[in-house]
Image 1: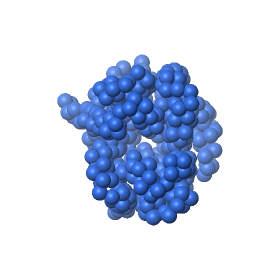
Image 2 (image 1 turned 45 degrees about the horizontal axis):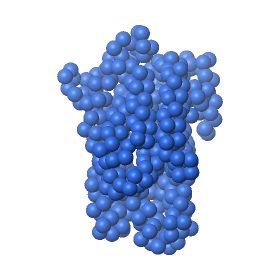
Image 3 (image 1 turned 30 degrees about the vertical axis):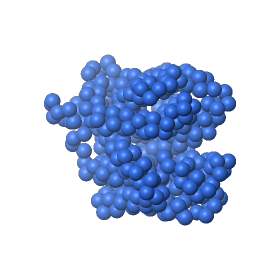
Image 4 (image 1 turned 120 degrees about the vertical axis):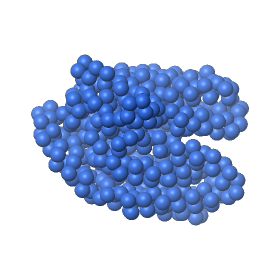
Length: 436
């Protein structure tokens, strides 16, 4: 998000972003120079995502427990509903109490919920465990994102968030290799490793992550910038401990729904894409191919792409990347073979690589220091709503109206969101400059 611009004076980039530390000629220089806290979150994220095993195989696990297909949506719906609770709670706790304690609560709660889901004797208790699982798991992200924003200045936030996105995909790639093998040897192994990696991340946080001192120091140093922009947006200086500070922010109120549209489109890769593959009579292995292509491209290209794109202003990069994502996902509507599906995945994966850490860093740049957890919580909540709608409304539209309507409507909605974000670009740059 915050990045060196080729022509900063013309692109509206803050002065603090006009120089980016790094080693000339080093293709990985964007991921150098971070403080210790960033690498702690990176390591914990890799460990945690390696255990991302239960979700992709949950339907198969429910079948092994004798849960009929007619009752499966109750558990899946509960899993999606937890995404509407966890981010809001996590963001509030991160600001009200401690980033570190919030992360520990979410991680240990996730481990306990994994065990409860595996041991649940019926659909009702499975649904209760599922909503607890997703709620506790999504508590972690706002606190971790606020920790990133506390630890680096605006000139490095885009790269820091891109690094964590890279960590997610490294772990996901390993999980994709492990998942099928472990499931064939017993679903209990999936739950055990998932819970174990959550505990592992918690141990990393408990032992290595600093406490709240860095946030408090950063908040004090940013007080003058907050006061300077108070006349533009009085919400930035609100001392409210709730989400009113976000809701009163006119710019963020406009931005979050636009980001939500884009996140909904991206979430169709989790819900409608498998339906399309199944509709074409292709085997589940094609979905595995899709996952491998996506994760593989991001793991291979993210560091180099982040370093290369750091020379360009964030808004044009984000708009082009968002176009690639929307176009690639919409092209799923004309894919009917493994090769064609793989080709569409390449298109939207390249867009995902280019997006890097822009959205999370953008929210961090727009937030006053005292409310970073809640701003990140609002963003994570927007993601949760988008994912929930993709799992419910997206699949309903696919089955009742038709695939073509869904895919091309997604393209139209994506184009409208891109135009909307482009119109907010100057205001976002101005606000970010005031925070620098």
